[in-house]
Amino acid sequence: MLPRHQDPIVAIATAPGRGAVGIVRISGRNLKALIEGLFARQLTPREATYLPFLDHSGQAIDRGLVIYFPAPYSFTGEDVLELQAHGGPVVLQLLLARCMQAGAEPDPVSHAPRLSGMRIALPGEFSERAFLNDKIDLAQAEAIADLIDASTELAARSASLSLSGAFSKKIHDLRDTLIQLRMLVEATLDFPEEEIDFLRQADAYGQLLELQQILKTVLQQAHQGALLRDGISVVIAGQPNAGKSSLLNALAGAELAIVTSIAGTTRDRVRQTIQIEGVPVHVIDTAGLRESADEVEKLGIARAWDAIATADVVLFLHDLTRCEATNYKLDDAVIARLLAQKLPSKVPIIDIWNKADAVEPTSRDRGLILSAKTGAGLDTLRHNLLELAGWQSAPEGVYISRERHLQALRRADIHLMQAKVHLAANARALDLLAEELRLAQNALSEITGEFTSDDLLGVIFSKFCIGK
Image (cartoon, rainbow, N blue to C red; front, top):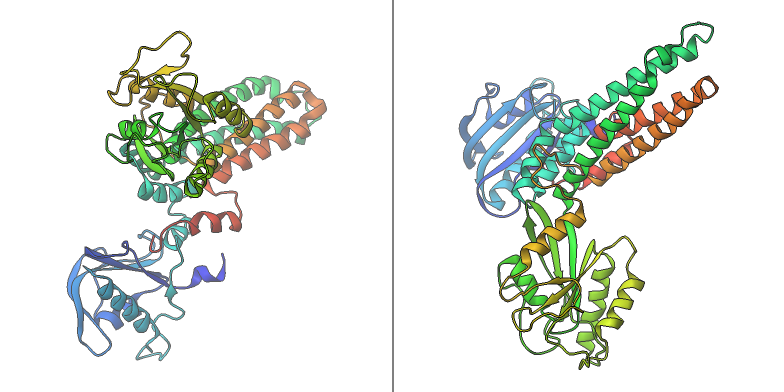
């Protein structure tokens, strides 16, 4: 454990700004001396006490509730003290300063600081200590941040499920099964002179196949959870006046983008997150693609191509009312060629023919026919987006997950496939089989943090908010 993890820490745990209630949170190894300095009394554990919060001179800063959670029965596993005051920024800053000051004050008996080395907590440091003190594992810690950041109701519920340990239990069950298989292999390696073939007798090959199948199921569920957390980025592209802004407004159910008959109205990207069956869909409206001498519009078109380059799905909007002899130099055929050149082959492009309310589509208009004005065809578009993203409708009990979880599960799957190859080679490759199983176990352990590096922990917890 790094030296900084020994320091007592303090932070404002509520969001910046004004609110009815604000919380200052302290975590450390022994807070009794600090409590005595702050309140001139000791507190009953896990019982809310209403009292004044006094400054160094004895003047009241505020009155509120204080709760003391002694170790190990606290969120961090250390002593935790929470001061609940009125949620004004000045009040909370005064309380924060008073806690720091009280920690530095000398104890009347030992004359040492009441809480030596107390400092402002780093982002995510309370959750990090909960992980380091075995109160939660790494997947649960990440679920805390995902619950706070959830953009849909289903994402919030799934994050809560992960926080409860449902995802971690699946990973632990997989790992335990893998450990049993490793024990069989190690036994065969340790006692090669034995006549009993441990692996054949225990049906190691069948166990490995079953393990692979369970892993694939968990990987599929984790993919659903990653969709709930990250969503998909959908960029609407096409010529000016094809109805891109109208389509954004129709999908969002609100007038977000300005719609006029003047070409080039949209000069910059307009982004809105909507939800389809609980999946966050980040829809980006872009400037119409054409050649232009207008410097501002040229910047908007450049930004449109930037957005297209990072899209998960591109909606290529065509105008049914526009004849082939277009007024714009950059026509749909040219845009299609540019899209094919600039986009990776795995990024799908949905051809959409808009304004079906104004003209009857013909047989040459291949793709999705809709009307952004009337809403006809929007449900089909929503269904297509979810299908392309790989979403399975209304999954029960899906848990939130992250890209690093998917990568770890994929690595474990690769190692198990290699293990199957070595197992088929029988005794000639048992040492390689054992190594592949060990690597698969390590990949699974990375998810819950049982096998990880301090660098990874630093990256994960630095993205949390301060006070959490």
